[in-house]
Length: 103
Image 1: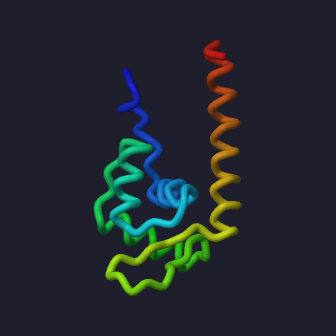
Image 2 (image 1 turned 180 degrees about the vertical axis):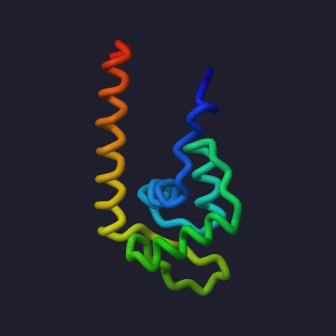
């Protein structure tokens, strides 16, 4: 029994925010970064649907460009939301590992 039972951290919104926490990126660069850091392959529909929701929520912002590839950046509200989520997950993971005797 491995990680397949529980799946991976694959919420596209969290993955996008985590990717953009490392600096502004366009969609394809986010897909590559997410695949590398989380071993999750997001399709274009999933990625751009989540980008649209994050942008409407004010968690990310599209940047102006002359290029056809539009870069995005995480906003301060997005940083706060990501930090809160990751802190919560960290607490749960630490407690779980402690209870398993792994730490």
